Image (cartoon, rainbow, N blue to C red):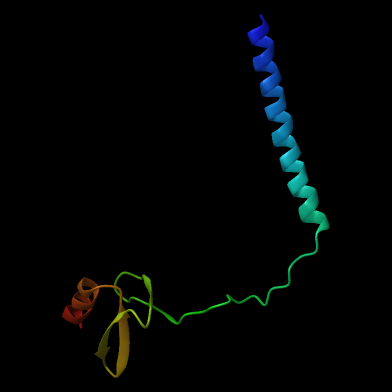
Length: 87
């Protein structure tokens, strides 16, 4: 009998703690001033889209192929080979 009350008490304490955390987060988010952001990431890297699979890759780490006066960037040798075969 005593064990049943202890379990109920622990469950009640856990529920109260969860509700407290939930409402504390809502109220602190509503009252604290927002941080001003410029809308840009702190560090941006030039990305290019792989024309075969659509993956975005960093230009500095991508494989390149030139076709028709344009530079195309690829995430893998397989994508570059597929592109070159279809051109």
